[in-house]
Length: 497
RNA sequence: GAGCCAUUAGCUCAGUCGGUAGAGCACCUGACUUUUAAUCAGGGUGUCACAGGUUCGAAUCCUGUAUGGCUCACCA
Image 1: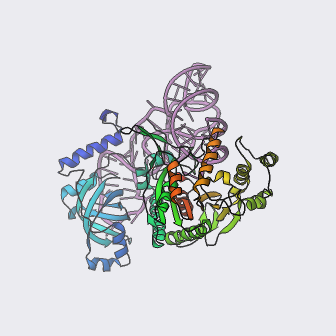
Image 2: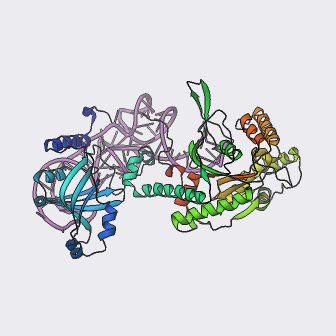
């Protein structure tokens, strides 16, 4: 907001005039530290159960602070509701029980002002536990009106751009973000108690590896060095497995320079976890148990509803191989040996869109993504991904066209990706090399060569199971939010004048 | 990046066939010492997203632009 007072409309001018009046009355409208004895909810929890008379006889004096959300002045007395982090409580002020100036301050209060009040808890004739004010402090004057007190703020653009207002007037928004915090806490608790070590690895990488995605590019001035914002946590965490840390995880932001949708934000939070001496099957069990644990911890149940669909998170979850899933849901059998040409012909027959660099494995994946994914509503582990799309996963020992990898689908969305980690440095180098060939054929998201990572594998990595969980999508699922923007406090928006 | 839709007061929304802007909350003035969507009496506070065009006349019709939403593409 500019300082051009001449540009302000009446609503804003009035508040600035009140600001001056408060100062004339000897009140500093932007106050200092205020020691509270209670939050609003603490008072209600403690005393709501008692009758008017019982509360009166208990003679409880409290100090609370918060934002004025409603105000009803009636001549020589008045009511207001004060909102703090815990909720709301009503205050009642009488002209004969505070100083003349304090009552004037109440008269001057606007919705949105932040005040501190000191007083005695009582119950009104209508039965609402309230505070009779003996002392009133203004802690922060609000110079801009809040949205409508009943309809709240509905304009989604304003809600995302000015989340601070959204949080004030739409209580369920705060609930969602408290749940988000609880979900992450529960995940930490679960993995910590299994002996995993939480680590932090760099977010700026010289090589953007560990996933197929376009990175953000940045630059370090002193080293005159091009850097990428990380697109995954994977390669550093596996270096830690080489280093003998054995069970590690990281919860961190990753950045992908790609489209924005209800399921994609350019920066999002991943949990990646690696367990030495495990494999994709042990990770499957870990994954279903972890998510079921979190659901119980946060929601108290594993039976949830997402956008009208009943979802049962009780383990064990369905397990099906990718080619079996294609057979089951699309009626196409791709399991037998076949040439790239045969696969292409099948793709054409079933109207599967493919690109020039694609071989058998890519085409299997396209069949899956275009025909099967949307049908996987209940939690389903799809395993056995083609080697072409899994450059960091170990090949299956029976059928080297596929890897020991799985993705977890719930409500038709990928929620996790995991595999038995490739620990053969020679195979890893060959995989990187074929990724480089794909890059030449036009796949600009193909993986880059990472010599130091191969060197780490040369030192020797134990057989390892690894997991990645998209935290934002998990939060969407468990909080029943339709858009990723509803689980990100500040989703990316286009810049505006 | 493409398609569809939206943008009117601080907020939530009406606005008919193209005829000169309207309601609730908020706000302002006054009354009111247990109200609670307080009530009562009075007051409309506006770059109709922006820029053009058509027309005697545009919030309304047309074109373009901006921002947002949804779907699709890319991806997780």
